[in-house]
Structures are given as C-alpha cells and as structure tokens.
Length: 339
Image (cartoon, rainbow, N blue to C red):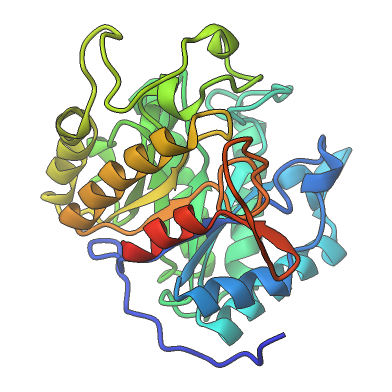
C-alpha cells in the first residue's frame, strides 16, 4: 500500500463549501446487510487519494453502534472504527462527511423505525444525544477535514416539522462543538432545497438521481422499476423530453436560488444502478457532472465499490480492467476524473 502523505484541504464554511469530489463508503450502511456492517478500509482512502479525489461520505446506521434496548448506550468498538476512518481521512487528505443514513426514528429504507423522529419527543431527544456524542468525540477536528450530515433523504414530513427537528439536532451539536460544519439534506429525498433553514448557519446537500427511469432502471427495491422499458439518454416521452437542459431547470436552478441566500451546496449522492446501460449511464453522468461544475458544486458518487460505482459494479456490458484486486470500470473513472 502507498504510504500516506497528508494533503492540505481547502477551507469550508456553511456559506462557502469546498468543491469536494469523491465517493460514498457504505461499510456501516445497515445492520440488516452483513456485507454493509463491517469496518472501513484503509485501501479505499488510499485509492481515492491516489486518484486525486478528496471527499468521502459515510452513510451509517445508528444501530451499528447502539445497544438494541437503549439509544443512550453506544458501543465503543464501533465508534473506534469510525475514529479510524476519520484518521485515514487525515492521513490521506480526504474530507470525511459523517451521515446518519438511519437515525433514531427515521430512515428512508425499510424496516421502518418503531417511533417517528418527526413527532416523538423521546426519539428526538435520543437522536440529539447521539449527535451530541459525535460532536464531543470529534470536537476540534477542523471543518476542512470533517463535517456532519444530519439525516439522509428526509421525506413524508412537512417542512415545519422537519425544521424543528433539524434545529434541535443542530443545537445539540453546537453545545458540544460550536464551530462544527453541518450539512442538511434537502427535503423530498434530497431533491428540494430547504429555504426555511437558510438563516441557521448550515450548508445543504442535493441528491441527484432524476429521472428515476435512468438512475433506478430495474432496481429490485424500487416500485415498478423492473417493468420499465430500457432507457435512453436523453429520456424521451416520460411524459416529456428530459435532457441536460431539463436537469438544469428542474434540479440545479432551485438550488442556485438557495445558494444566493448564502447557503453552501454540495451534491451528497448521485449515480445509476448497474442495470442502466453503460453508455446511457456515462452520458447521463457527464451531463450532471458538467452542470455541477458549472454551478461550482462538489459531488459524491454513490458509491465506490458496488452496483453504482467504478469498482466491482457487476455491469453486464462493461469490459472491466483488473486493478488492485478489483474490477475497474475505466471509462467511468476517466469520466469522473475529467470533472
């Protein structure tokens, strides 16, 4: 393995994020999937840095570090795995974005939580406790190196209820670490900017998967996706033409309006499932990547290794290259490197 060499990272504030680019690492994504409840890998950080990227997002399941019967008992050995990922970020010059993909009381994925973060007082208190514990644990790490991403893809909640919970979590973090950089996902699965939080001193994250018929073609968990026709890009007639200009109008412009209010924007997730034809995937990705660059935003692909990323994606229509023990989609990697 290449010896780690620390790299200087650009400054970042809630109103002016660095243009970080990188990958989601899913080792603590879910206790329900054994392959996604493991330790992070130093080799991922080394490879990301070697390629020239500078950002990882860690979408994690709180149950991996939480006692089954007590939200307030946290498992030190699991937290130590996260400590190690943060340390590798320092060693390799990679910003680490810590995200509760599943938080007490909310997750976009099944199984549903037993209580609701949006309405249950005890659950809100437990979630605030957990974020405060993270804030205290990582206090003093510069924002250039680390940020918090509160909740993954909030949906089926009105903005007022959502914002009350976010404000409570932000307060809990700031009581322990007043300067911590905090990023909030947009509403409606990360698609809709939250103008009601523009004065809270937090940045916001866009997730860019539209249109679903491109990004989730034949995804087995997505309702109806296995019956969709094979997509093209641009996507025609569903119900109207969707192309780069449509993405700019529908997805980018609303977030540029938020940015004009002094809110930093970063794209925390985007990508296509492995069943989308490779040529379509690359054409769609290039249009989004060019829009992100034009907007001045960084981005984070879902994911590095797996069904969306450049490594070990198991696409049927890719001529893979053997690379460091992985199967590399060289065309996808070269596209990402251009942006």
